[in-house]
Image 1 (cartoon, rainbow, N blue to C red):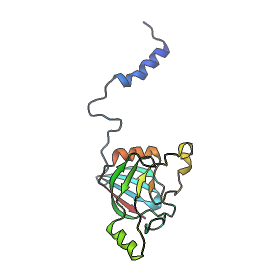
Image 2 (spheres, rainbow, N blue to C red; image 1 turned 90 degrees about the horizontal axis):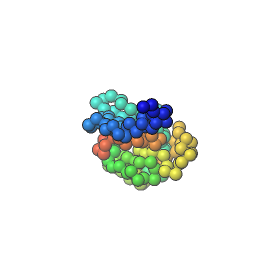
Image 3 (tube, rainbow, N blue to C red; image 1 turned 60 degrees about the horizontal axis):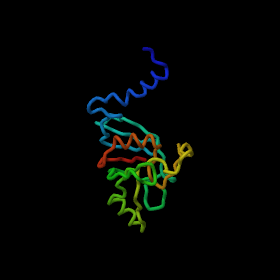
Image 4 (cartoon, one colour; image 1 turned 45 degrees about the horizontal axis):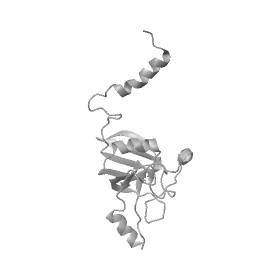
Length: 171
């Protein structure tokens, strides 16, 4: 029996569907990060496990990237040590991980200036309505103070970062 080229291609396409994956295997079997490090001046987010950088992603920051966030509406990204304390798969942006800003120190500092420290700072993907314009966000600081990555990067971060993971944001 001789198979046509189309039949061979069809069967090859079916192979991943009909052949079960080895037990415990996933499309990305990777250990979770135990820490996230953001270096604002480098525009980089690093996933860290056992003290080693295991992944790196290009980021966009708030529209005023210099300095620590002091108040709501200042368009700055906070600096300091926080926790990624909850996830939102249905945010206005492609997935988001909430950063535990403001800390008690952040609140005290803002109060000393008579300001509201703001909040709702996230690591997230692109706006859901970006569509064909997604490329236009790359390399720009466009958020209101959040840390943004492209959606492919957000998928990888989402898989490797669990709720409760510490995040450090450096200048």
